[in-house]
Image 1 (cartoon, rainbow, N blue to C red):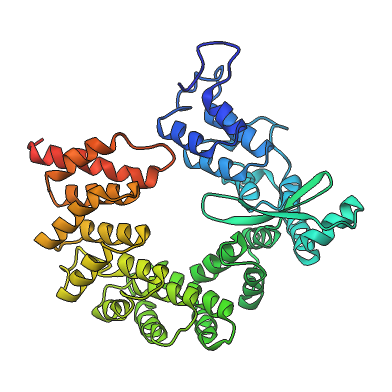
Image 2 (cartoon, helix red, strand yellow):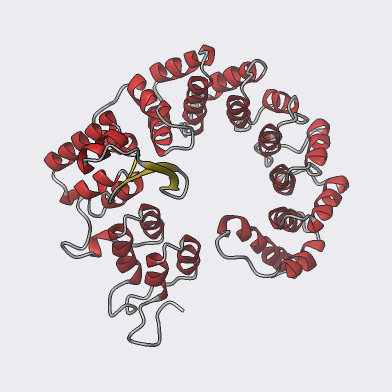
Length: 424
């Protein structure tokens, strides 16, 4: 239910936010809960839930509510935390929520500049040192890794009564961009390399640099291919990959250089994490050279590389059918020991143009896989291939499970197949 039948009970969406139950919040939003402004005594429940989320410093939930139409501007004066409080928290997701376009204008440029300087102080001092200064304690803060938004995580440090996240470098990057400050490549790279690859600061730096589509940045990133430190090579590879990926211009000027760089790079890279990034980059090119480079790693012992191969082969299937080599590789990968590899390969086959009996039988075999995600991928693939076996398989799987929206949505393909079959 979106709202309770009792005046004493608050709407379910608000309760889920207070409980920090991300899966339930997402499920309720997908069901349309909060869309009726009559809920919550005349206040759109999504807007009220947004206010609760940011007051709880749950930037990830605030971001999720924004995706489903929450309007921060509907929150009254004093209902949201201050921007200073958000910057001090160290949560990039929380700061981003408070800088949503609908309320961004309420912050004067002078305040944004002051918050940039505050983020810089935290970043340059370091969370541990600043926590000690503010609490007066010389103890070592306890650190845990926490999800800050839907995609990235940060460290959270607790000392005495204070708990602060270490996302100030990412916050600094966001505020500089908002103020029109063009931070140099080296500085953004340093902010990223102060953390690991899954940290928000890394993502903010690579996405920002790639979005500039600047030849000087391309040259600087490409030069990192020869760096002795794998983390530098990984940073360079990601900037190059995203530069091409984000280039939606008609010229697509970075397509050829990217294919050349990554084809050569794949043959010489020794670090598995960097090589995985390189193979993912190759998988974003519709070119026989990319397929050939990927096929070289189809039987690699590391499952991450095999997964990248399965995901990247024949990247644009609507343009051509599978070659014999690609088809044989996908058949092997659909029987891989790793569930992610099997799922990637099954999705590739399902969405591809290659209508081959062996491929259909391989997908049908995966209907009995031990992993539900693989089973869903097989049902999806067979539905796209107009294979009647998808119907009973979907019935056995039952309705989509909450919290797995992106994957479970594939089951809708069965309904669409049945409409095609019945001429609807």
